[in-house]
Length: 480
Picture 1 (cartoon, rainbow, N blue to C red):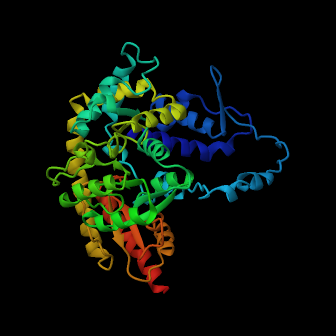
Picture 2 (picture 1 turned 90 degrees about the horizontal axis):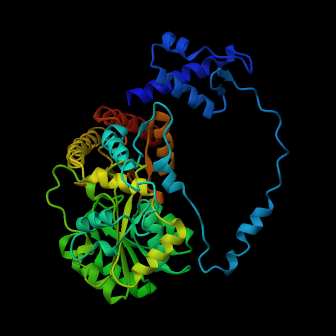
Picture 3 (picture 1 turned 90 degrees about the vertical axis):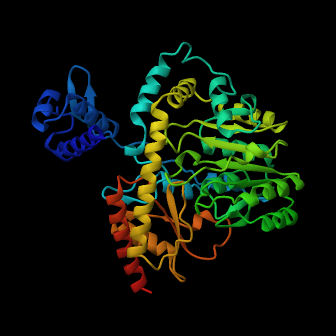
């Protein structure tokens, strides 16, 4: 962390001083920069590499670094207006026009401007990621015999076995496929289970990335409301009867965004309803490894209680590690497994073997359970800090459920609040928040915000971020 901040600071200093040098002019040597800024040679090298990547300097081995010359006039811009017709010409023939709207996903992937507190992040802050353990695992993995060879298309047998044990029940390694992250696994599942134009039942509200996958595949998301106990079974049954859908996408554990857990008495009922409809459940078990310290025993995955192959299970290591550690699993029983396998092979061939080997090294190391315990304690502390700050500074925001897992809170805003105006005002006040609208596949009943407490540096930032959100609310409410 310290090294990264030093690199960024030095890059900023050098960037601001480039006007001192004429185009093509030589910058001071690395040794001079080390002495002048009192940093390590590695920091100097990385800062210059960053400026080179930005096209501001040119580095020449053995000669040094030089200010880049301005680029000459490029070729005249082409006329791409023809694409408007080409991309929409077939839309009239599609039952459900395919639309690719990544805005709901990008809001959790984009880094906020400097000085802005990140309440919209979808991953652990670097200080919570097991960076040393991952680096050590990757180093050990690279030395394994055959580590750089082609892996089995289904994934390494040992890694499939590890995921199967985590799912439990009668799931075996032979029924697990290794995929490149949860998003990729969900994409494969929806493509395998529903043809273009078909309805797919989704929780309401739900994860925007899944809605984007469905729409990009030409599917029609149909919302089924959830409450504090998860999806409402009688409404799920009504939705199956009304639409004839053959797929229901569900997050039974710490649902995104509400944080709800599917109640024990509803689990069997949901499986029964789906089975009677001749349909599948896609179980997105995305944050089982981000449980809070006070959660108590967790319910087993739905897949562990499903002998009949109703459930297609998706789980991932990414949320508990790093956004770049994209290793996940798809588990299914029966003929659907072959369809999942075929689609995944066509799309991606396989997950790179070094990453799979690193995953095995990581989850088999003593550092892994220590990391999970540390994250559980820290997430509880952050959740409690954010909850207390919201009750103190923003009592008019409804917080219907405080989850015992996951990384965010779901707030209902006062009636009549302009959600978009509040999000914009929050950014001006120095805090990035996630609007609720992208989480609904139809018109929402009220305005909402989702606030993440995992992507910030610590509890002090949480308290300050809520204070800034209060300033934004005052601005918006006074303008009404």
